[in-house]
Length: 104
Image (cartoon, rainbow, N blue to C red; front, top):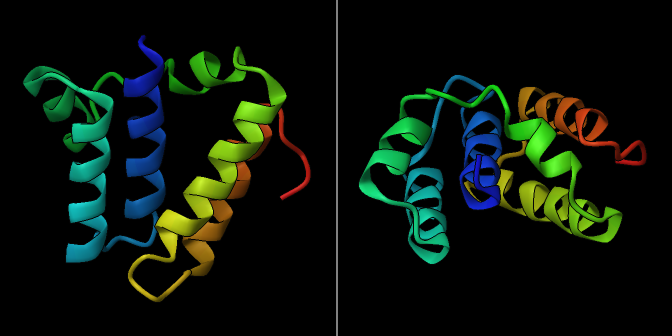
């Protein structure tokens, strides 16, 4: 799995963790996929949560500094709608542990 696709899979999981993907979150996810150059097929996979199984392992292979920065980015993204729900925080912590980041 490409890093860009893995990153978007994890971001989508966080944004949907509270059961609601607000319009601002949806727009931000689309913008992220645009910036990272995901193909139409990759975008569809992210949006429909298909093929995300290897995302954590892909990101875990990155240097720690990059993984730390990604967690910070995920926190900011989850707050884009002005609400950081406990479910989103729990998902970020779960992903952080899975990619080898303990201090969140």
